[in-house]
Image 1: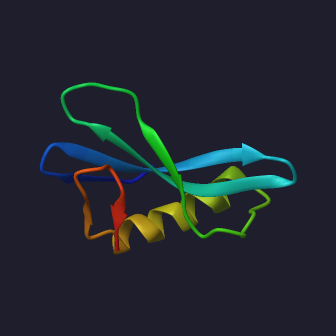
Image 2: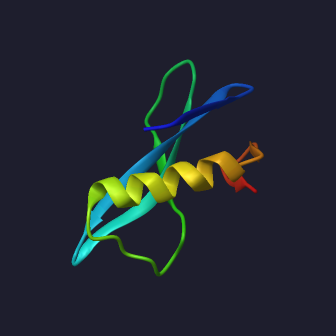
Length: 75
């Protein structure tokens, strides 16, 4: 799991299990508290293992520039 901090939020690489494999995701949560919001990245791609999905999510997290006021990812 990789982590990046922006102003008042943190973004971390994540994995979402599903039928036929795993999806890469980035979870966003306020630094102070709160529930994370998961954003699928690389839509349409499914990975056989959670490790592969997390590696892909980590690469996308590296490209992440910011998280906007609505909690949306900015690349």
